[in-house]
Length: 59
Image 1 (cartoon, rainbow, N blue to C red):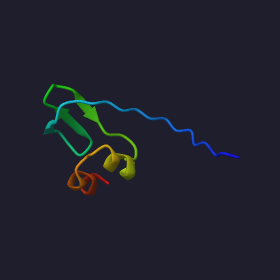
Image 2: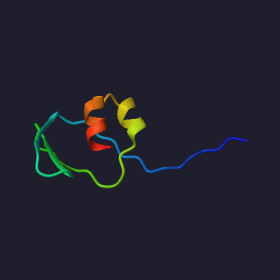
Image 3: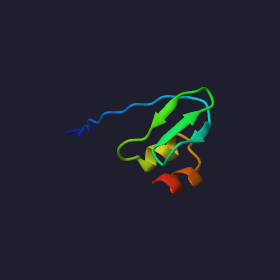
Image 4: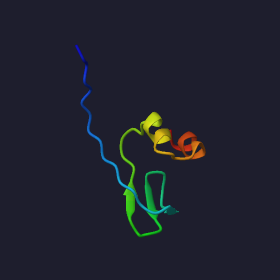
């Protein structure tokens, strides 16, 4: 019997981060404002090629 895990997942691709307003709010070079809410999945973040320095800083 297989065990399937159901979880919500939202992904997007944007330009590099250009500005940080606070620890939860970022802006990208293309003008998209990103709010980080909830927990960051460290393993998924690394698999998506986010630099380890960033992962260690926010996780």
